[in-house]
Image (tube, rainbow, N blue to C red; front, side, top):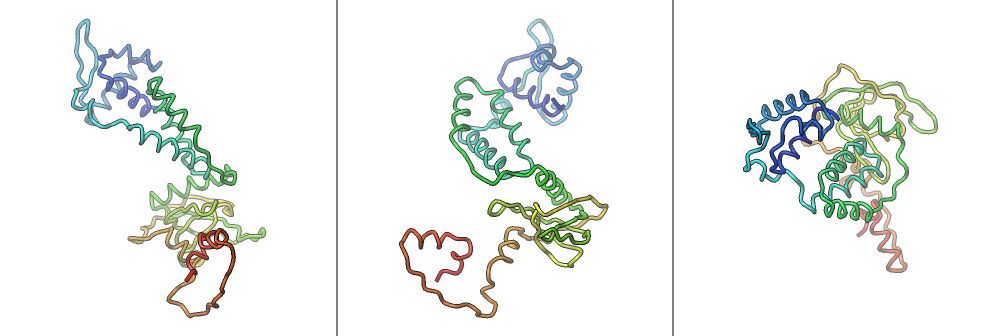
Length: 264
């Protein structure tokens, strides 16, 4: 486990209220006792009130006021995290493995009754999406990191039908999951404007030394939908179409992403 995992594990064990020695913590986590000391020092430096007591019954403990703080998730929050993990994995979310590790930590420190409840909730929800491509997930991770860090990327993109375009500089403002596909939205240096790109058509991404600032209030979701939906302020080039049919069919049409906006 990483140092962060060890620190969190030690924190969880001490929050149980039981006083534990460094050797007991080391044996429980199967790590060296010196690693325990380093983790304890890091936890204290971050503000965790850990108390060390010497003597035959000594060891480490946490002040009760901190142990009683709402650090853990309640049952509803745990269920929400588990279901979100299922959705994320099926949608090809780039950090679904991290979510799965978070759920594993919940299960690791759950008692038998809690673990049974978690397993039943985990098996009670299914999501059907097109299978996610591993290459797309790798690109999504690069894009998400670039969004958060404000880093310009060099992108190779396939415009469709195998037609490759020249490499372009791309400032990713956000990634959007829509109708089973992932899209990257940002400023395209090749076109000189904000555009959206399907991630499954990206053929290469490379970090550059360039930096950018995302425009204040920019919404990648609104931009993507704005390019797909008709502009109500534009010229009136619409024809009125009357559709007659069974109520169930008409309701399905009304729920369509485009027809729902055109319905009068």
